[in-house]
Length: 323
Ligand code: TXA
Ligand code: MG
Image (tube, rainbow, N blue to C red; front, side, top):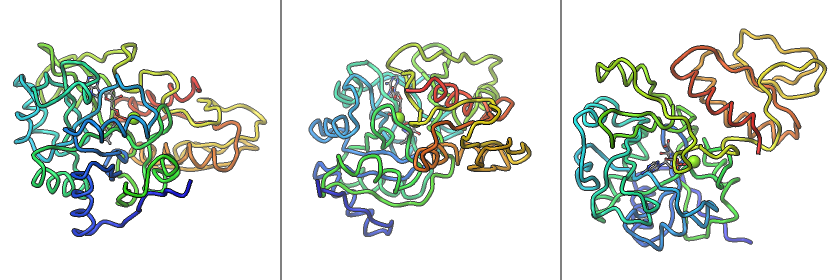
């Protein structure tokens, strides 16, 4: 199929055009600080249906609505506990998604039939400009999952989006190029529909960050057994090659670890991040590189510790369970 989507660099003009394209019901993939998203008008059922088709994602998996500021929160929600407002004030714009009781504006085609909605204000300047522009011409906001096929690795560059979805997008859709994602793993998701917050997906904003903001001792982390929650399918986050989390002697495999860990004999080093942040930023692109170079096995030595290291370990554990 020669229906490739239009790839454009980000200028105020291409962002304005992208907002108009969203209004016309087309899809726009855009950069965020976590991973690239595949956006559509959150109030247009036909456009949103196309997100599910392009991703090959089951329709009962809810989408996050991306808004431009905390001022837009009320429009999409019916109930916001005080602790959710504190989290939004502290971490927005940023890599945090809040799950809240939805307003009537949020229809079943976004929420997968649940009575809740996920909201996020990303901090990436292109994302924010696109969302603001779209809000100003549409009285809506941008629904967007990560811009990868269902169960595959999230994209952290416009080229990754092209590789993942190029075949499935059409020439009225577009991809905005905003360079490499600064954080590299998906947002932290916090369920704010109960008396106390529950972390559904770990990320750059850590359990400790949330606890210290709210002055709470132990914020609960829910295991990913409920299928509506992100990454709960075992095959999520896995590249095609087998991911192994310890060194195997004598294997001709790819190797990814912090820079102070030496490369075992016979392995090919695919990266030496010097910090946990850099580890997160490069993790998914290393999965892609390992597949691209045809490795059957990728050995990854997980960083130790809490915080972001925990979010990385969560992804790695799932990746190591394979497809
Ligand atoms: O960093 C991110 O969050 C990226 C960027 C593009 O914003 N988005 C992202 O979207 O990772 P997605 O759809 O790939 O993952 C979001 C997960 C989904 O798997 C979904 O199950 C969960 O969030 N989710 C969304 N709305 C929800 C809701 N109302 N209740 C429970 N889980 C929800
Ligand atoms: Mg995803």
